[in-house]
Length: 151
Image (cartoon, rainbow, N blue to C red; front, side, top):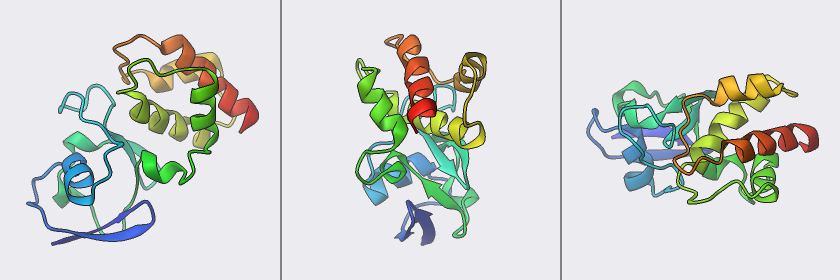
């Protein structure tokens, strides 16, 4: 049995130590906003925050997470979907298929926490590695810029 802090709630989970955190979040806790994309930490669909740092949950075994670690998923970013990034994503009509969007938002949230008014170049550099198979990258950049302005 492992104890995890996910979105501010203490959770007891029963899973093998080598179970990827992604599957613990989705299958054991029931938070399905974090997506499986590639399974090798290359696409960003499974991005969550651990202690404020964006991490690829598909490649982190449960045994590597401590009870004191603070894990935040897309569901924990805002209980009412009112985070500035979530609102900007809607305003800029970012999603096409939508599959990668929770990972994109989590990556962007880390950037805006560290850099309140990032330049376009900073946005592009920080988002590099988060793959959008639909190619909505220009809308993603505009949404991050909007969230920085309006947030």
